[in-house]
Amino acid sequence: MLDCAIARARLMPGRGPVSRLADDLAGGRLAALGPAASNRCELLELLAGVSDGRPGQGRDHPVAAVLALAAAAVVAGSRSFTAIAGWADDVPADVLEGMYQRCGAARPGAGPPSKTTIWRVVTGADTAALDAVTGSWLMARASAAGTLACPGDGGDDNAPLIPVRVDGKTVRGAVNPDGSQVHLLAALAGQQGVVAAQTEVGAKTNEIPMIIPLLDGLDLDQAVITADALHTQRATADYLHRRGADFILPVKDNQPGLFDALDALPWRDTPVACTTAGRGHGRIETRTIQVMDAPGDLPFPHVSQAYLIERHVTALDGTPLSDVAALGVTSLDATRATPQTIASLVRGQWAIESLHWLRDTLYREDNSTARTRSGPRAMATLRNLAVGALHLAGRHDTTEATRWASRNMDRPFTILGLTS
Image (tube, rainbow, N blue to C red; front, side):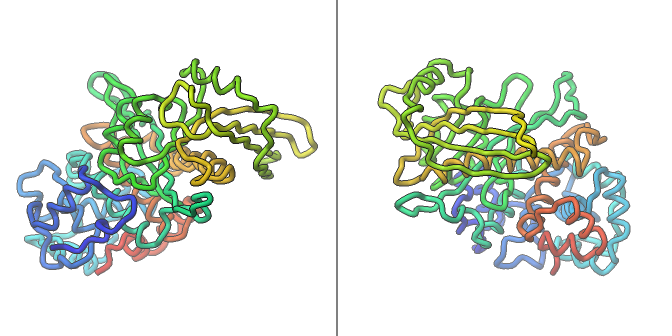
């Protein structure tokens, strides 16, 4: 049986699609892995389980090899199928042949795939499987590096907590046949921030019910889910409680009864538990948090503590710019999460928003010409993979790291673990 690192990850697939793919790879029930199958869960091995709709999965250009080349090209900054094909043309022949041999290609010397082949594979890819295997690979790497749980978390009992941030993004350049836009919901996990799961939000639904299928494929033991106020829903809280996960959720006007109950709590008599200050972008931001045990009659299930965060922003000369107060609830009690921990996890939600900003600015996702079939979601997955792999390599200056990766053909392959 294939001894995969994903089986040992803390926040890893339960019985969802990633786990089933891992089991199928282990049992040989998916596409042949080729002669290089080893006791490690390599990206090539996992990509071999993604169907792209071509008969025989491509005689000259196996799906795993084409997707791996596309992923490496995205690490190097490629934004379009034309750019990916041009980058693949420059891959040294011996590197290309070695990769194709490891994928069991019938003709390993066939040369790089054409733009048409790359387009056909990427836009025909089973995106649910592609999201599953890339999330599996990233989480295995994060688990092996020990970067899932945040240091210093856990309150008095010192139990580790694994942050999982949920947020959605519309791919504005992509339009479905019915005129709707492609909208993707993702879960970003761990300190380094890797996309553990992603799903598409259909035109006839919204993000609220889709958070459950998004998280169904993950083992949520010790996970703390953060999201925006849209997901502050009783059904979501019940689901997370059943799964053994915790939550920290903001409360706004979409839950008026809960908002009013929290707003009426004696915050004036509650001391500030933690204050942080930061300076940047021509302003100074001061953040405070107050935390209290939640009253038993709150109209929301599984809440242990309530919090109030206030943000005061001034210009460098002291001129007030903004003052914002944010209420919220968490299922974590005081023995498991200090006020500092809650404040850190709330602020950490920006990480997934930052990922979406990178996809828009670095990769120009909203201007992408990948607008048909599975192309928009598949390219978003490859961008998630590229950013996550760079983070795991210790590079959070993603734009500069992409330039660095593009200057040496070996670097994208090394970052993705594609070297033999």
